[in-house]
Image 1 (cartoon, rainbow over the protein chains, first blue to last red):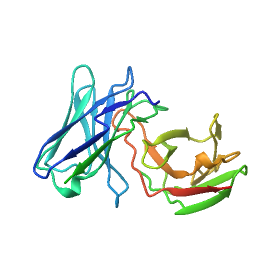
Image 2: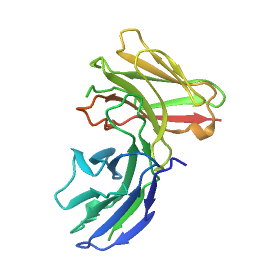
Image 3: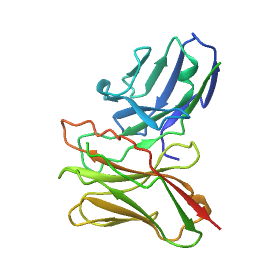
Image 4: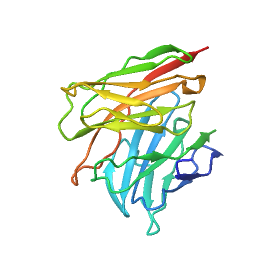
Length: 115
Length: 113
């Protein structure tokens, strides 16, 4: 158990809909990362938040957005869903990203199926 | 961030040591080498990391060459449960960096009975 909690574990929704994925980081971790893993793609970095502020952006679509709340949990919002958005979405967390030896731990992921 | 090169796949006999190589010839002085593995769509699992010196923990050993251009992850006694995709990643630290991990394609290790 990494200590990173993601909900829901599985989600099936229709095209055009909007979903929210939730992540609770490890206790004390200030940084949250979101990744997407499709069947034909590797692990793609989407976005990172640190202590409530966006820190880095990767290959995140404009239809997707994220935020980190004062209690440090994070949500990834996916809207106008398309079939190609079906994927495993991982959340990860770490302490301050500027410190060496700061390991990133991953949750077990949220399976999103768009039908 | 420095790019890494890993073999696409490897086999290992159960009970033997698994040696997974990684090339990172463009690594910079402030970049660490990290290893993660992913077992069948589970969340990536942290294994070990290092900067210059060899490292060992309860899961594995990490051997980094003196010029830091390559490294080897060693699983001393591989079991069937070690079958997974293994990722070698270089990661930049520093207050101006994000510390994010950029995953490549990794090495699929198949441990065989």
